[in-house]
Length: 195
Image (cartoon, rainbow, N blue to C red):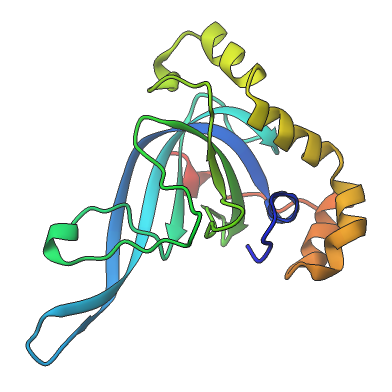
């Protein structure tokens, strides 16, 4: 996502949802070694298994485990083997078992969690217990309904037409956003995202 504000990132997101991280793994590619054959850099990509609890934009299957990935982000696996974690300043490092609001894009039918930074693409639910996905439906509903972050995101989703009119020309994919606002929706390929 090119936007540096939460409002811009919400505009750029194809799907926004609340999910608990069931698992995440990092793979590394394009490794570079120095003259002594020591690893100096590699490009991480983290794959998430997410238990979808609530949709804030679009309709992905609730109570289903879905997959998403984040390029250029490592969750720390393999650090002792000199593999690398890639972070942007002010980014939020997601943790297994915790619940987040995810802002995602659909690329080639898959869900991508874009890079974070000043305005991250995943936010922890401030009032969620660990493993919220394992709680009763009433508890999940209560936590989601009382989250101030969910309320803020929902308000911005409702007001996205006004936000787009104000900042749309500063976004990298303004045409795609305008198409979505007009009802043309990019949908993920469920066979690629449902576990």
